[in-house]
Length: 153
Image (cartoon, rainbow, N blue to C red; front, side):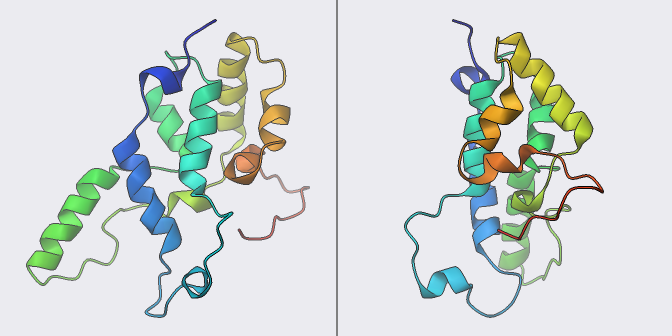
């Protein structure tokens, strides 16, 4: 059996910082999910990361992995900058510099990279496998002009 990426490396700090970003609305009002707890909810970025890392070989490109997840910057440094700004009473509009990762939909080139890497492990149809899973992993299918838009999650 080959070694998978999840066995050797997983950017826990970066993934963990995306969790609050996906739960927190960008308004001063409480999020609808705070009004009623839904126990079946799972963090989309963390779920996507676990499934992708389990389907990729240990030597897969880590920067590309982060990009496919939707983490297009350094959330650890951004969080440190944001905490420092709060301590100094400074408001920072966009400390992360990229949109929240849960809304990212990988493009065709990212999907081709994922398929290539998964096939190196002997997974014949990785896209079919991921689309059968619940949650964020089903968002791996790239959107094109002929596909119907998916409802927001």
